[in-house]
Image (tube, rainbow over all chains, first blue to last red; front, side, top):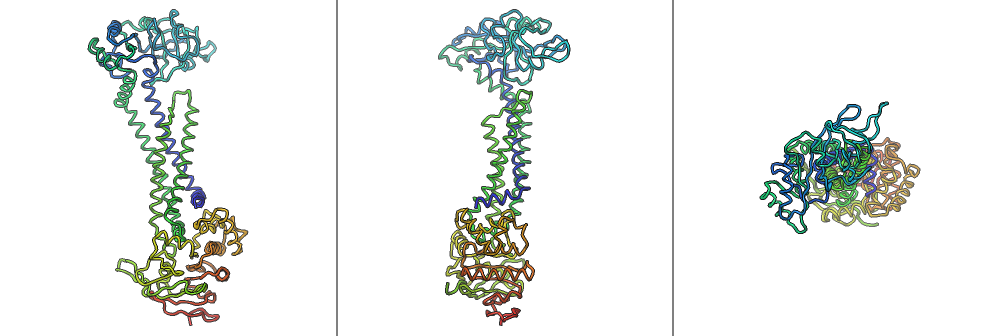
Length: 383
Length: 238
């Protein structure tokens, strides 16, 4: 009887297509909004998350999140080094700078200054050159997306070519030489990210008394991060957070202080209501149209179990197909958008969550249909 | 088969309405012998449909007794009553009630599938039943591609495909022209006799009375008389 159930639905092409497409639409919108939200949220903390090999970020105590930089004096690095449990500590600068291209155009960029001696915190995936090349005078590293895009080298005959090692840029009226190209994670502002050394960064940016953004700390083996954090606060007045804590706090701040969750959440709810509503109503109409046939089946001796299985198969079938089309479409969209400004983070948890939502829509639609079928009076077949 | 296929004594059924309860059937007595073709006739609203619904096991009576093939369906649990219907009763409806998205063969196969037959066996039996109603060539067509008479013949095939002991027909010719109606009744009677099925037909159409072995005339919720139809007449029971 399951094949009969499926033929009953699939044979009514207009309704079947309506239900499938509305479920696909729901899947597409929910997953797209979710994936985009996830992409944006992960980009807010990508700077913290991408630096490996350290245990703790030390900042000014008023610094609430990753981009809330309250600059410190360089002497704070040595004070942190003196805290029990700290194996080593290095400075890190993070700010912004205006990069000027040979054709006179300029581009705001993020500017990162790494500890001169160790280069800790530098990019790990080099496309051209090496991290150590930063030690060359005026050396900088540029991310591959910016090198081929916003910071692409203008050609004299028009057009551009990707920036390459050996090219020069003007950073805040300072001559800078590209020594390497790296591949990095996108940041929230979608700005080019330029790396140099800490001392060179201080020389390039306008002179200020305080320029230290973070102190990156490695703990001694066996040291308790909470105890070290307390000691940093007690001995230096600064705030120490593990990488995970800093990332999570930054994420929470971003969610709490921007409308991003509300905007994307609202879109997701609208997608759920509209897509789910259309699917539910179309399925309900299908059931209305077919209630006489279900009543005939009931009169002919179809038991409740058979009818439940039939309706469940119909609901599950359209849900599965609709979901498959929706997920396929979003995967194609993500594939087509790879490398562009619009990025989607399509994780298994996101795919699972959208599946749960769409199954809920299909389940609710099916339940309404089932309720109608199970309460049918088979005697109507003689009326 | 011998004895009574349907045996109803003092059957009563009322419905609630705005003006109180309406007594649709009151003390109806009816006996249909096994293998006979019994027509149930009477004016509109006399309780024919209610009585046939009770006999078919899709409606519970309020009073009286009713045994179908020796079983009182009202004493069975719903699942057992459903199982009884799908094994022993075939249905032919006034409006054919074929599922429009299924082919003729798929429609006819439904009772076999409900009885647990494998898909291939059900399809084979459905094709044989369609050939019995001379529609083998139309097995792959959907109801919308068939004429009214052809659709009712598909419904006949569906009613007899699983070899039920009792076939209940509700106005099987009322949606058909006279000629087609006669054809359908001829076919129905032949099939019932070939398969040793009892036929209970509710009808208004006196032109088909000649196909009945006996006719039960009903009015005001009661069976007034039962008898053989008059030859070449059929307007009343003798």
